[in-house]
Each structure stands twice: as structure tokens, then as C-alpha cells.
Length: 70
Image 1: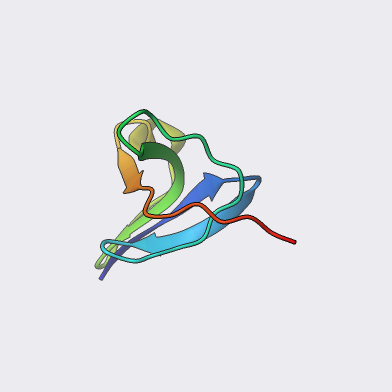
Image 2 (image 1 turned 90 degrees about the vertical axis):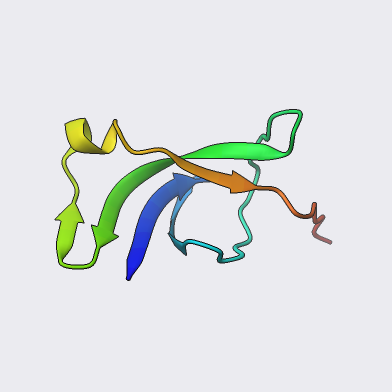
């Protein structure tokens, strides 16, 4: 199982490939994509948390909707 913990909207969120998550206050590019900052990456038995190794990791997401609270 591959997943990442990313920093987004002032919080940390666990995300997986293909998952849908609700994030607060993120800015997407004109195509509706956003690059998230990974703080942890788990790929099977391999856990990566070293900042220099995570600098090489790219986590991108596609904005599928825009919500407003009350």
C-alpha cells in the first residue's frame, strides 16, 4: 500500500492514489492541479521521512470541486 502524509491548508492529511480528500484553502494552478508538500511517504515496507529524500518526491492533486462553508 502506498500513501503519503502531506501538509495542506495548515493541517496534515493522509492521502492515497485515487483518493478524494477535502482540503482547506489551497490554491490550484489554471488547470486545476495543486502540488502538495509531503512530510511522510510509505511504500509497502519502505517509510521515508527524511527531508532531503522527500524533496525529490512530487505529490500532485486535481481539484474536482470548490466548497463554501456556512
